[in-house]
Length: 266
Image (tube, rainbow, N blue to C red; front, side, top):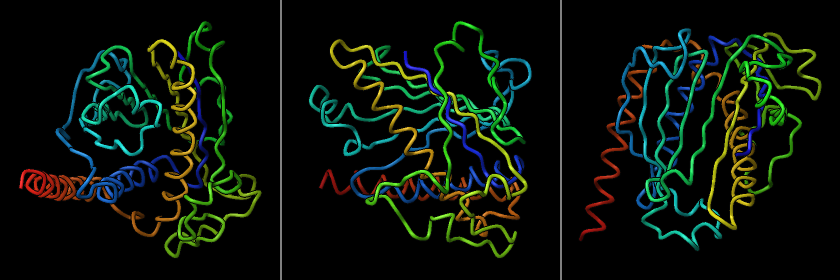
């Protein structure tokens, strides 16, 4: 098992981030669902008394999604798995400020599992053990800080409208962010994302686990750059607004997936 903690510092409060993250997840679901691939939202409902999350975070919002993204799986994995096995099932327990997400693949069973635990704190990324890991796991953990301004973005993935060094929020007055933004910007908060990647197929384990961690790092960078650069879209929204938006997105995705199935069967 490969354990890595990504620390993403953001120029906002924890309360603002909660709304921003849910807004961007809903928008991304629409953007990534088309006639070929997409996201199924099977459940989005409150949960209570989940003992796996501990007493402090035992209640919140539960989601169950299926991701159909065969084109985004690396070639060496597609070689050993048929296309119909490329779906990834995601279960997420959002007990903000703590969240736990588990990704699995039914075909691979216990051989494949990604667990992402996120703790959101009002700090500048300097909490040493945000997840309260025991010594044996703390010794295995690697730490990587993600900087939404200064980290390199692949030229194929760069979008000018999602560049924090260019974006200015009219509603908050934040941005554009300078290179030393972490020293000059207030407020600040940090997402501490602990990623545990498990892939136990002989001959591919190290390669796939490394690919997973690298892919997660790129994804976290892209998501959080976009999250800041959409500030004026989500700023001021309430949780009631977010839940209505999620219901609308779920209906729209269901409609798109039905059309895809109809086309495939015709």
